Image (cartoon, rainbow over all chains, first blue to last red; front, side):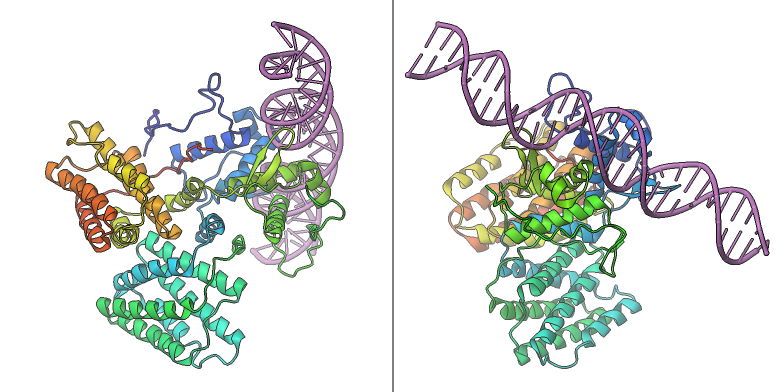
Length: 271
Length: 271
DNA sequence: CGCTTAGATTTATTATGATGAATTAGGCTC
DNA sequence: GAGCCTAATTCATCATAATAAATCTAAGCG
């Protein structure tokens, strides 16, 4: 598609090559080159795995030095848009942005923002029930089995703070797994992102629920009932269970007054 | 400025051959350096504006060449974590990630994801009513005035497709402005992000509502009533109006079956 | 005295070329 | 034909030098 010559997209981005003389915007050359490569990719509708020209060609194409090209590549690589390999058949190619990287980059933004737990739970209470209502009856057997296993992973209440923490993280992984199955990618992403923030809080700030046996037991029962409801396609039931679960979790967390992790999110190296 | 003396941070210059850790990842040197700088920043709890060592010091610190340091800087810059200036007193400093950049980076992720309009509206219907309920009674006069002006900007139905488009974008800007005022940064961000996606769709794909006079008039009335409700602190009323508005907007959009923009989100150069 | 501006200084930016490392493809041996 | 070895290709890193941009200093001018 989009085969013809004229680019149909409005170039509100100040093209530094075209408008070079009068309005030299103070974007560095590597950034300009990176932008040009982005446009180049979009215009050709390249997809994951499609290859880009090699370094030498780029140098010739853009009339810049090798260092500049390399810096441009690093920019694109940092954004997850390309991957680069050495050797014959190597070079740079289009790489789809991983969910992990997207969450890390977004996490960097909220590093400066001081999110509160109630901020997060306000959204969780809205989104997670909706998501499971969508999911009911739409999960395949292997996913259901996986969820069921996660729900049953800790049959007993925690006996140590460390175990408590593990259970909390495991519970968040349960939610992240649900999010992964969502048909609505944006909904799933936001939910998974919140789960990750909470997990990071748990790890870095030793945030975990006070060892309240009753609340914990109810949380576990919720997970199991939820999987049941999902399996039998009971959307409203799943929604209700999740809402109840969110309220319970919020109660547990609210005991902890806590601010968002002051740590740039590390990218988990999963190539 | 910076206490001189010994290099304070562990300069575990990982010689690519001698990686002490068993999980020796094949991360390139620029990436390693970038990671170390990130750690360095976090450990000192540096904030926006705090300065990093200059190039020469980094070269000495990390025992790498100039080019490697520059590539590392470009990585951090691409993520919005640092800004660099030339000249005396220049160099690199910590820069907080702008909302615009965060949205662009996240948009790159969804570039590959084919979001649908119904995906977006499913979430809007949940989040936007909640947000305005929070906002009621919490807006200062200038914000209210600003919103009111936006709501009144187009007193007449559009007479041309181009005007229609402008009105649609203006309406989205109204929602983005609301999101900006949200106390809940995450909630505000998600809503602003969706508004931006829809705006990009409008611009790039000529997506705008069919010129339905009645629906448009209702949308406009909604905005005005909403500002009124916000001003008098009527949370439930604001919520109801927004929900109704979202349903109306969804109806308009659903006429268009449309997929998300196939365009990397351009960063608007707003320093 | 105050303002302007020419120059010096600091710092990043770009360029060039040489050497090294990683990976694959193809050929060679058995 | 399987497995190893060599060679070719491509990026990765380093080193050096020249350039450009921003700021500071202070001389010069009115």
